[in-house]
Image (cartoon, rainbow, N blue to C red; front, side, top):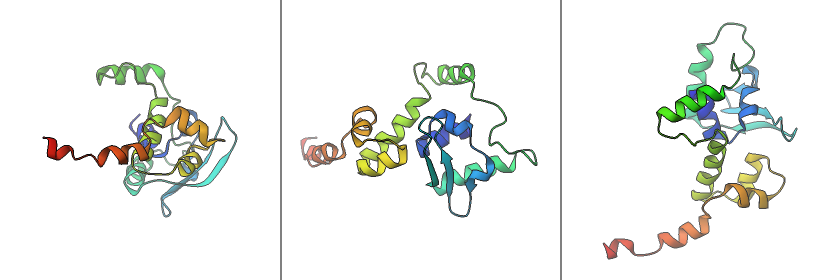
Length: 152
């Protein structure tokens, strides 16, 4: 489950798209993976992935059986996910919330809506802003200009 969570947080991929990944979709030299959305039927030939996540992914792939094609032997288990979340004190966390977190973190760090839209493979920037972006980077920048340190 750890690799699934890391991939969701670091790429914004949907759970089904993560589950359908094959080992041959991973390019360790370019730190990228090729994806095809099962929902939208669009593909991204080279989705960038951070070096740290690729390192974890490499360790995971090295532990797999020789000849295994799929990245994961088993399908996602809702029961297992709920158990993990409950133990972590996050009983209401849905796996899709990791995708929303990815998007929100991009926005909070000043990544443009156009780039975020492309990474999430949305058809419209309005969808990206309306559903996924919790904090507008322009608003965050404005609030950070306040002299809060002087007030404390």
